[in-house]
Image 1 (cartoon, helix red, strand yellow):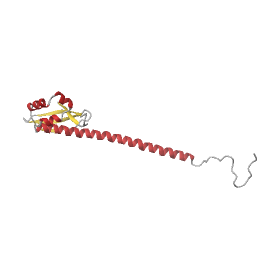
Image 2: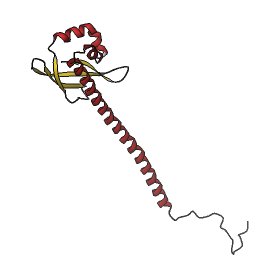
Image 3: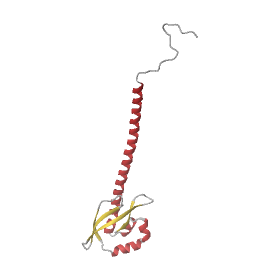
Image 4: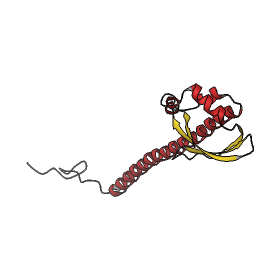
Length: 157
C-alpha cells in the first residue's frame, strides 16, 4: 500500500492517545467516589448511633412511667391497678388476690420518689416513705412485655 499524499486532511494510521489531564480526571473521580462512600457510611453510622440513643431514652422514660404508675396505685391502695403493672412472670408467681392480700398486710406506702433508670440492668431505685414515717430505698426490676414491647415491673426488693 502506498503512503498517503502529503497535505491538509491527511491522518496518520493510528491516533495518538490524549495526554492532557488524564491523571487529574482519575484523581478527581477517585476523590468524588471516596467522598460519596464517606457520606453514605457516615450517615449510616450516625443513624445507628441515633437509634441506640433514642432506644435508651425510651427505656428510661417507660421505666420511670411504669414505676411511677405502680407506686401511685399502691399509695391510692388500688391493688388491682398495681397488679396490672406486673410482668407475666410475677403474675404467674402470685395471683391477683394473693398480691392484694400481701400488699394490704405490708406497711402502706405514703409517698415515693422514683430515681433514674439503669438501662443496662433495667432497675430503678425508689425512695419510699411508709405511713408510719419509716423510709426505705426499694429496687424495682423491670422487664419488657413480650406482646406490647412496653416496660413492666417484674420485682421489688
